[in-house]
Length: 316
Image (cartoon, rainbow, N blue to C red; front, side, top):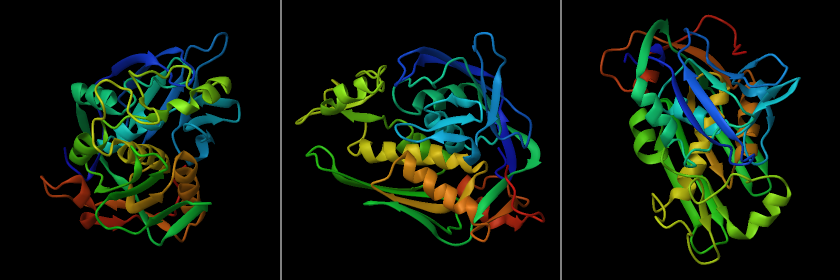
């Protein structure tokens, strides 16, 4: 796979499960797409209504409270989009159509690993068009109380630096920092699962959330222990899942980012706010296009072969 060229899937692949918040059964089909299509979501299964389609970008975000929800002027289209977006962006897939027949993506095992496995099963195909990136030119930040996020320039691809702090003996303060290459994403991030506290279950259920959550798709924490029989997959699985969510949310830039993202006590709301701040300031970023890249160069090294694109910032 040539790092300087756009990519898509070699074939379609499908996964079925339940929505973690809705509890409803849902099937998602990932399909190849032409160059410069980006990631698009198509909602099917709407009784008496036509299919709806949106591009996965910052303009399509309608809510960020417990998950990233995408939609348009007609209303929400699909919820909990962050894990499949993280898998596609983490593996370097530029173009794909995500067809979903319910209001929420299937949670699967709570991580991006099932989506990674499905993509790896069909493979990734290189297209003829050069890959484009959004290069961060200056720092932008957003804050909500103790939650602080920042995007800053970084010349080697996308870097994620995440810090969490929970007043709980099994979590406490955790940090992770990594360059998001496909190998690193598969090994260090993809398997990290969503997590929640037993003390919050009743409140979430009464509000209509977490209706599909179980020990099969969520790391559940009591006051003193992890309730899942298998325990955690990483010693710091909690912060790694926050990094996974950040990668998925940042995919809504519409193109791969060349920059470093740091979040402290963050979540979907903060990720969205920082990305919105970046896109709103046209002096903070520019589009760049991959120049000729030598075979064998890694995704993280693409930045050294970039040239500025000769067009105004516009990723809509």
